[in-house]
Length: 155
Length: 300
Image (cartoon, chains in turn purple, orange):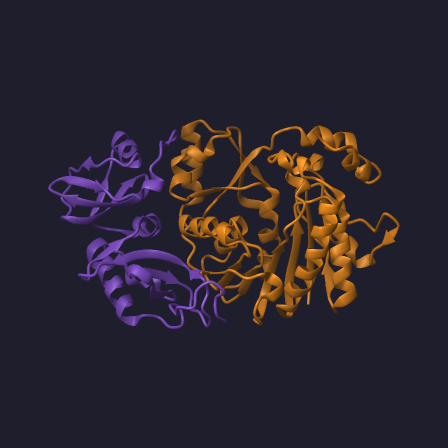
């Protein structure tokens, strides 16, 4: 079944190479076990999008969720939606915020981190995993998409 | 302003004064907990801390009515732990929950913006396959965004006119058909500005084509859940009756614990429907302080 809007074949077969690289990355970086992703397929979409979705025998318009992005240099960046869904299983490189820091982070601001995380992408957490941050020299750079910046009244 | 023709149409089949009084009231704010992302107990504890009182419903353990209207400004909404959704809109997935298995293939024929798709995914625990189809490419953006926000991995999105959906076979098909939306008047005042009998008849013609295709996409033994958010019998009983006259389909009795509802009409404006049709239900807004809805469960 070909999609009516896009003919490019992304979902006809799983990308085993990307699957291995992505699962190794999240296990090594965040301690999120690969076993959580059994039965899910990984596809490589346009612009280096790493997509996790169901096994498919046809080409839909889109499927599943974009869980990461692969840069031209081969680095992987996890998405906000991936962190919000699986961040609760992370055992390392998690930055826990105070309530006032969480308010700032949700508004799109960078926050100071007082933790022993390695530099690089981190799970930013307050009660729930909020999204992805980039830890550099003690500052967590805000990686929330602009469309998600908002003032939360109840937290 | 409720049109006089609207009142005239329904005065013989329900208490139209109660109906009109109800349609002028705002809807209660309801939501469901997205169990794909959060534990129910944790979310409930957080709402307690916010001072937002919640009322549970007897027919679905993840659905709640809140006493405040700004629940979209909670942290839980931001992280996708809750999904703001009208109570009647939660009924179709709940009414096919007994047919959902880990290997099920489900089609949501008119899926955008994805309330029912994401609820189906939660009921299926992100297993199996949901094909979420919608004809409107612009509305698919909202569908995609809700799927991402709710952490739904078992869904593929397609952009077909359902009448020309490619040949595939599904265990369950949800057809929440495009309709004149009379039952949504409490949240959308425009409904009555645009209301006309002609609009109802046009919707009915389209729904008859959609229900045939939706039924043909079922595996033998599969279940089609047909629903609309309108009160118009032309878009409800008449559409189901049309399917029964064209295909070898039979209805299963719909029962919803804790809801007040009427059985589907046996006749409308002199036209008599098949007896089978009365196994479907129509929910009037004033019966449960909700939106209006019609639901039929059809087996192939």
